[in-house]
Each structure stands twice: as C-alpha cells, then as structure tokens.
Amino acid sequence: MAESFLMLAQAGGGTNPLNTLALLVGLVAIMYFVMIRPQQKQMKEHRTLLTSLKKGDEVVTSGGMLGKIHLVEERTVTVEVASGVRIRILKTSISAKGTVAEGPAQAAPAEEKKKEEK
Image 1: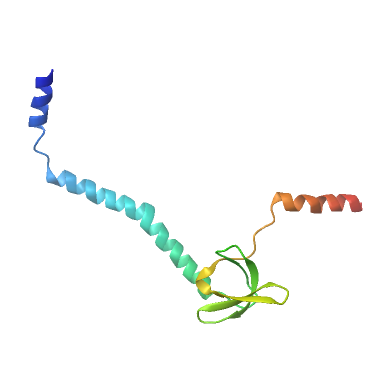
Image 2: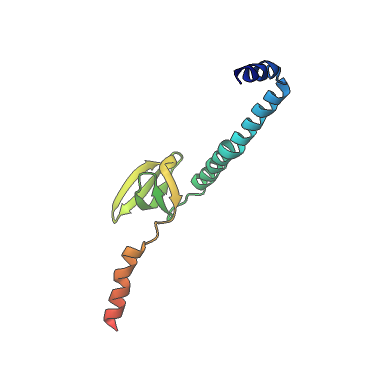
C-alpha cells in the first residue's frame, strides 16, 4: 500500500503552471469584489456626505455624539450638542446625517402616557 502512494507522488510531480496562475488570478479577483470594491464604494459615499453638509443638518459623530451643525468650515464643523453648547470637530469624524431613531424601549412610555390621558 505504501508503494502505491509513492508511485502517485512521483507521477503527480509535473503540474501545469497555468493552473497555478489561474488560481492566483481567481483569488485576487475574489478579494477585489469582496473586500476592496465595497470599501471604495463606502469611502466615496462618505466623501459625498461630507461635501453635502450644511448649517442646520443633524449629524452623528463617530464618537456617538448627536448634534445640529451651526457652522461649516473647510476642515472643521461647529456642532451644537445642547442648547448653547457648541463644539468644533473635524469633518472626517462625522459618520452620518440625521439622528438615531428612538428604540422600542423609549417609545413605550410615550404610548403609556397617551393611554393615561384618555
């Protein structure tokens, strides 16, 4: 039995280099479509988001702070996070426009108050 494995190992020594090249090209193509292309698309969307910022927009920073834009400059944005409280942040730290929607835990007390009023 061991002799048959040795014969198979010796016979299989000559592989076609085109098969190896095709495998490498296939792996690179898969990596491009699975990893690189979606990341480039996300970066492009973030750039368009940053260029479309204007006064009065509600934003979410990458640190999780919510606020309304008060002033837009070339590289920084002044965001009002509370009444009269303004902070300067880099444009690149803004992750999204709009506010975080209320979750079901926060919406439930509002429904209970409506029922109590009736």
